[in-house]
Length: 329
Image 1 (cartoon, rainbow, N blue to C red):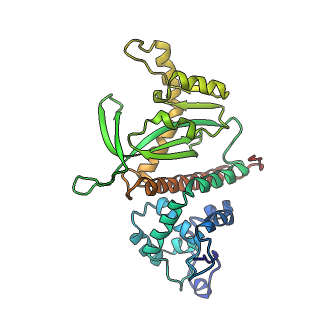
Image 2: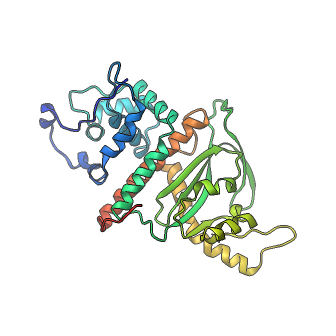
């Protein structure tokens, strides 16, 4: 199946509609990024030139992003919003006389994107563009690493998602609790931009994903005591990365006053990623899964990371403008 090209040009009926500032809420998101570069990456989802053309892949990709930016919780709801919301139609390139994609079409596109595991590739493209504009800073980059749990969706108090797993964690008061679901392992910088992200079943140990999350460009690593080990300290030293990981004690070696002071100091910067996780859950609907299976939930969280960086990058652009272009090599 081939894909038609995205066309944001308005038809005659669009010119008859009254303009309003509300219709321009996403203009900076539109103008800051080179959307054609996303389109080139997305075209690989429809390599064949045979068959009936689908909706433009960039239109469908924008629809998925809107779902995260505006916390739309189902594809049926998104289809209805596209039918009646002028801002959504404008951002997706839908003219006033054009039918929106059906919820089935939106779902199929998400499954295609998930099957191709394209979300990390698209996140890298977003970050590369932000670096080129001097919004995301590569020089002296700091990595802040942690994981958060997304509870598997339940029906009548039970879940049938066999790919999820049990995660046991202590809360701020030291009380132990367990959650059945998935883990989002993330690495963000000091400004809260998501640099890398992996999703696993809930029973995967956080520290096992450290190497997968390192970018290779960081000068420091901030993380909680789960990532503290002799092997971790040696690895960071060998890579020339300053170790800013919180220290942990054990039954035979309790933390000293100096260790507690260190942990408190590290916690100030490490809290940045906690804010991003709170935003994931409150604004992007990642408190509980929408989908079954690791692949679909990884794609869903990956799209949330892309939407998060698009939104944050646009906010930085509005506050500070574009700095001198820098190399991203």
